[in-house]
Image (cartoon, rainbow, N blue to C red; front, side, top):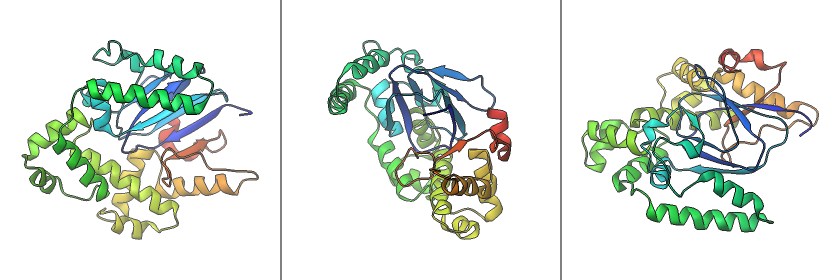
Length: 275
């Protein structure tokens, strides 16, 4: 790119592994010192982050189901929730599973086809040798995703045959968030998509299981750093600008990101804290 880029990233229902090929990225969250890293692991989050790079960046971003990250790395995911870490410094040592070495091997390959082939092989081996996740956690997570976070936690626990307390404990271990927090993220993820497609706030609030429009707005501000109106207006502004394009969203068909220019950052009260 011709200039550095700052991008606001909203929470999504996935864990992120960035395998960087050289240039670092700077990631900031409210209340935390910025992290400047080449390769990055971020577990599930309920808060926004601002990512910045110099304009040159290369690597592979892998989005993982949270329970798959638990299997790959063997780290209780609650230790990584709302955090950004160097994947080679995870709380539980990876032993031979050095992500930095994997990133270097990927960078050295001459084609993307070969890189993705290596990544498939390595992840398959790590998964086979990893800590098995609970089939009931996977089932409960799938139900939360299917319903857009609208299923009540007691009913979810009943469906998988656990008590609410046991479901919460296993979710925190293998997903990183409790089922209620995970449902909030998935509910808001669906709301962002509906708003970006042109739905009104009242209609979106009703469709996504919020009590009312004020409840939607409060959750939106807490997890993205801006109001629904500010978020959708900023995305429209990016499209309307000469040669403008929206930030590439991290999930196809989802509204997850905003490019932050210096003349627009004042729109976001929490972004001013983050940046």
